[in-house]
Length: 139
Image (tube, rainbow, N blue to C red; front, side, top):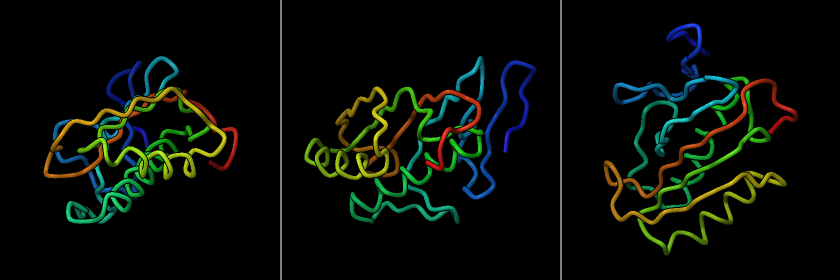
């Protein structure tokens, strides 16, 4: 669901996601783009999956990204760029496998950055930029 900041920028607050934990929106829509904030592995009910395995955390982050895109009227097929932050380069192969399954044939620009410890002890965080507007598929 989108709200308005002003005529040029709208905020996105998916009804099936926990609200942001700080002073930000899950995403904003501006100038034909959806800018998705860094998303963490937090379940829709607000449960932080800090102690979950990397694959569980990565799957939740990707589900959160899809939920934000859909709430913005966009979709995986409209992604232009994805930035992924992981706590260890050893998690890169596992993320790449999950991401390829999640994204399907789509191959947006992407960076995976090993950072060391992430906020709250999470193992993965994802942010993205997509085209706003109707999705072209069910993705």
